[in-house]
Length: 164
Image 1 (cartoon, rainbow, N blue to C red):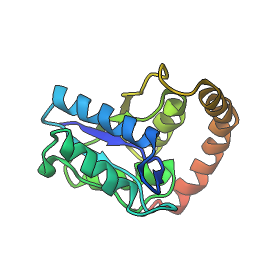
Image 2: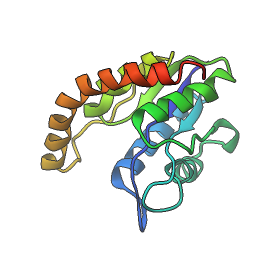
Image 3: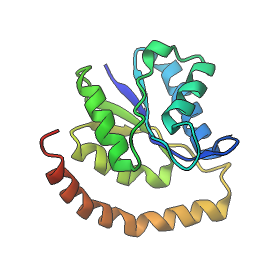
């Protein structure tokens, strides 16, 4: 068995951010291609309620994913916490193979974190064809220094969380 893990994105005052909605709908599409996979929407409470995971769960159900196939992770605040907490949920189901749903620019860092927490990831990234170009380029540029910085932080986090 495999799982689809959706990484968190902002909830806006009036509902899901476009990024959160696109990731979640992409995950629903992947689930419809593989309906035996469980889906783990990740994300805790940000600036606006409800949690990112709760908003994604509602979108998934509206898109036809059965409630019993959705295992929300609603405590995390970062990519590392998304994947660490998802790994704990998936361990209960004996699952290590996952498809990470995120934006393409975020894929390499997400994959690195997933491996660090004991998961075997593939990427189910979104294309950037309908994303505001300046925003996309800014996010790509942000990931360049973030990758090595996150690698260093991972060493600390893994040591800190070694007993989980």
